[in-house]
Image (tube, rainbow, N blue to C red; front, side, top):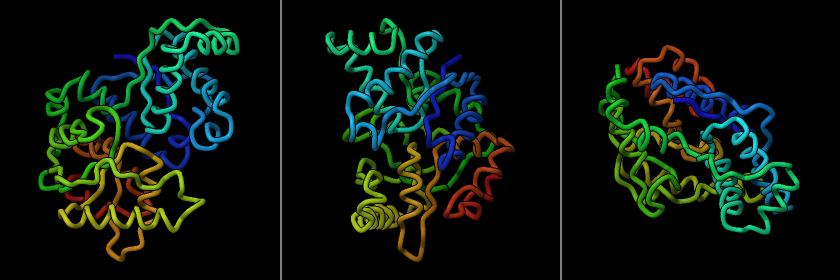
Amino acid sequence: MKFAYYPGCSLHATGLEYDQSTRAALCALDVELDELRDWNCCGASSAHALDANAAILLAARNLALAQRAHRDVIAPCAACFNRLKVAEHILKTDSTRRVEIERALDFYYADATQILNPIDLVVNHIGLPRVRAAVKNPLTDLRVVPHITQFDDPEHPRALDQLLSAIGAQPCEWADATHCCGGSLSLTRANIVIKLVDDLVAHARDVNAQAIVTACPLCQINLEMRQTRADKLPIVYFTELMGLAFGLKESRKWWGKHLINPRELVSRYQ
């Protein structure tokens, strides 16, 4: 399976371990990722707050690049995924704006490119049986809580739970899977964010979770950076746990990139 790969800005910087683990885990499942050449920022955060039209053009340009490459797009970052989907929705449903976007970017939208998150790709396209077959080190007794939105039921998402179970981990039931971590306010309203993050961590501790698992680089860094409790909880990407369960040697390099060191937690699975 071959896909265009849109890493976005975070996966080339603060979320580098997400980028590396996504590439490695999907490669282990025979997925070939071809990074979009000359990709640009998706328009998340400051762009869509300052100039909605410019933000749409930024996202649409990446879709144009994928269309020219004749590939569906894998977008691991939740914010990037959101902005690409917003642009896609406008192109599909607003003919007036579509023509304006096409003229600005000098392309014709053919509605031939899917935008997928890796969770959707793995669970719904590759299939969990192949995931189970790739597991060499089941993450037995590793209690985790997933923190994610989109990709399936927006009120009660289950795809990440299913994926974590397939690699041997034990997803814990909790009510905060879709609760905001305050990522967009991390620098401007830290007092609000600290309360949100500490509540999430406290609720994860209440169900005896050993880590919070996410699919968003903004959530990951925010949840790591803004914890104030003494018993800090590791925040890991689901793709890192996939690589660990698959027995990938390069997984040892990812843990050192975390602000809250998860090495003690994962060492027994290496």
